[in-house]
Length: 118
Image 1 (cartoon, one colour):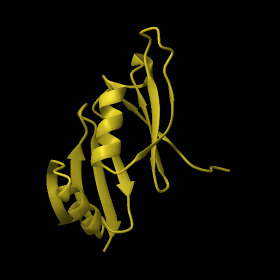
Image 2 (image 1 turned 90 degrees about the vertical axis):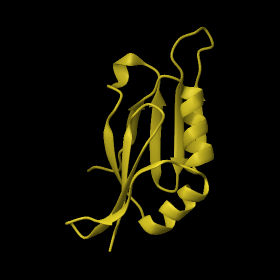
Image 3 (image 1 turned 45 degrees about the horizontal axis):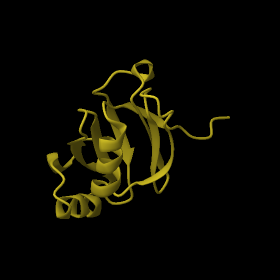
């Protein structure tokens, strides 16, 4: 039985990505792995029920992926992010699948399409 999924996002600089996800998007750092010897850093960030693994390791997937994130109220989250000066690619719009949706990109070109049922 499936339980949950955690999205792995490839980043160039895990510290910069952590700052973006925490300071701009409201996530909190759960834990990190930093070998301290110049090897890739790995950080987990969490907000509510969503977890992302931010990885500098080249084997952990390509940069520039797109994720769809379900939220309770896309318009409310959009307003919160705008107040933090987050650049939004597409302002909220009504998608054909009856969701209010908007999009943003992180520092590494990963796209978060964020939506909630109308």
